[in-house]
Length: 433
Ligand code: FES
Ligand SMILES: [Fe+2]
Image 1 (cartoon, rainbow, N blue to C red):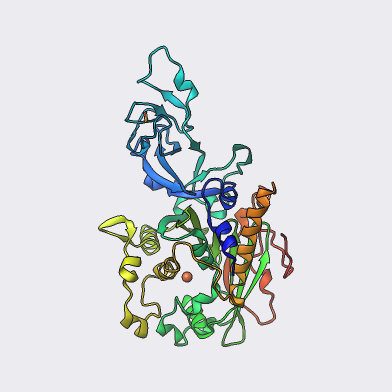
Image 2: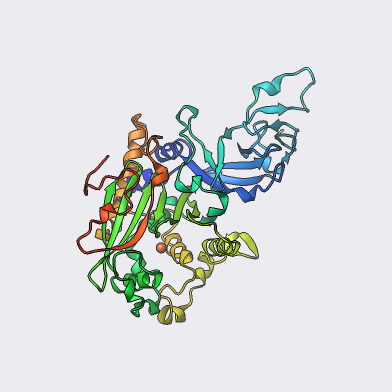
């Protein structure tokens, strides 16, 4: 539970807010590279941390991210012409390059050099993992570009997509580190039938066995351990044969979750604050060992972002159609009555309200990771106001080694030793901040 003041502090991310300042110390995955498919293509609108922006790919392929409003008299640069290494505002012809320099001012007197004094607000971008990342903070605090495992793989080993979600980023993010909903929200009635019991031994469970175990043992012992990049959480469930079914998620500040996945085949969910009442999920799947096929790619994107064919900017299943809930299915096939799995999460998270009021909730042990996440973010917001920079940004942190894991271990094995390759302490309970 948070006080109303704490809730405001942690949720508001606009310019000049304490959490907005924290967010402006990190790189944000904003746009999928394919949305700007070629040099000089049409610009697109974007919005991040409450600021309206336009993105364009210039003649050299470099991506510019500018404040949407032209610095002359505020016309939208969305209507601008992107050509010859810059975007030209079609009101009076002022033209800006990707760094925001005004490179042409044809409507000013020929002898004037006023254009040299004008700059559009511009933000640096980098492209990797099929995503355009943006940094909106002070120049002297700009960290090195993101360096996770998926930023270091060939393009065909990574799938990235983004989905609009109509609520504050924190609600979505809390869902990504919430292990105990797996035994309810994401369960089929058929999952309760014992299957693949032969995988109940140390090693990787089959997905059927994992579903069966989560449906049978609906609780999980959730434990959290601070790391240099945020924290790890372990959800520990029993199995029929007396082993431990372990799911390890990594929470990377300020809003990224490596979701428990087996071995070198990973899934990451990043909940980017668009403004106080909207966020976008950037989903990334990666496979270290082999490239994805075209059909893997199609399936992952379709399931991650089920969009409305009549209005491709909107999700098909949304609040105004009750996420197309099927009450018969709820009692007979799938508990949520909503399909596919990500929509189950979106339905419950969005209907908490645009900014969920955390002053009336009742947290339990299963919410340990959510509690730790809030503590960290709140202290980061307060600390930065006192001049203490946020954690997780030191380039010596081996972020490329962060891994989540889903595995069965023996009854006497230590779950903290699972997937601890990024310098994580295995001393339980140690607090780093
Ligand atoms: S408003 Fe853009 S050039 Fe005048
Ligand atoms: Fe979920």
